Image (cartoon, rainbow, N blue to C red; front, side, top):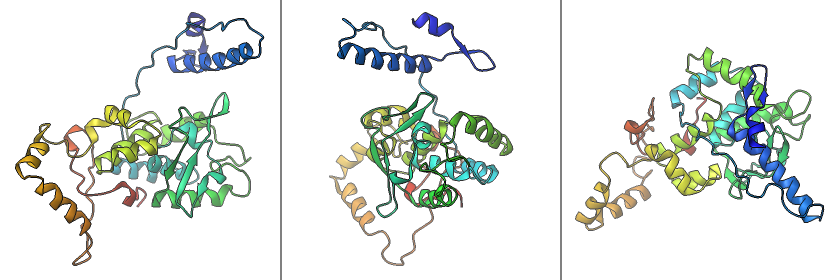
Length: 299
């Protein structure tokens, strides 16, 4: 079966099916055949012992804040809110195109993720953690309101076509993502990098990895494994902060906490956040004390 799927080709270019695509087909077959067996139509599960293919991990190649601004400036107006939300939430494309208006809570500033949409239709999110409630950051609020002004009367979906159907992510990638990168003078990355960009910038900005994991619908361990080079305070040799903490008898940590609690007092003026124009292992702590929730990529 897997050999047959490997030999299948799709699209005008005749590309072979990727391991991920094959695994999606296998997953649907397992579900169908499992249901048939549970209902007594089969004596055994025909796919018992057939394993999914190993999938190559997507490369983490995020855009910098400056590149995000260039991308949004070059992006056509109608699809621009889509990408502002993508950069500001880290949603998987399958989750974002399935987003419905009733999943938005502007009062609580939250978005409920409970459905994903692929070529095979709508289904539950990828994992149990993927069924989640995420924060609606200020720039995301503005982008969603702008988008709803266009679609609120024609579709239950947030990101819909003029006919009221959900946008097709493949078409969006070909007609908007790639051409916009080119107009902005940016090298090509795959559209999934909006998710990696959110995670990398959030961690570089000093956000709690547990919060980032909740936003992404991933395990905290996965966030550490995938984005470790972007996590703040990893600028020096490992163990340096711990040794300094011991030498100071814990006073440094307590003083730092006290300083954070006192931020905003006195003059009431807080220095503007400094964001890296290029992020990477060598730029992990150049962001200063800044939280992603205070950023507005479109400004």
